[in-house]
Image (cartoon, rainbow, N blue to C red):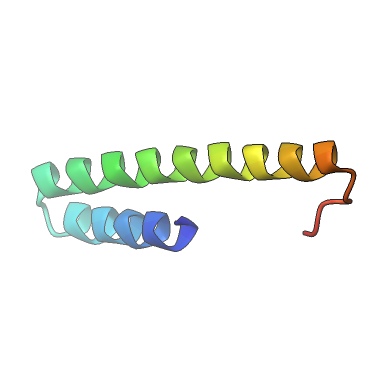
Length: 58
């Protein structure tokens, strides 16, 4: 999921550089949403591993 977030971020940067503001804004918004979903799933995963008694694997 983090990979997709980076892809949309790069699309946003490239389209902003070429002057496509609408596409850049949409791609940046999608990248932001995917990044926060990734962070939420990471925190949930770490909490579940801690509650199970296993040390987190990073």
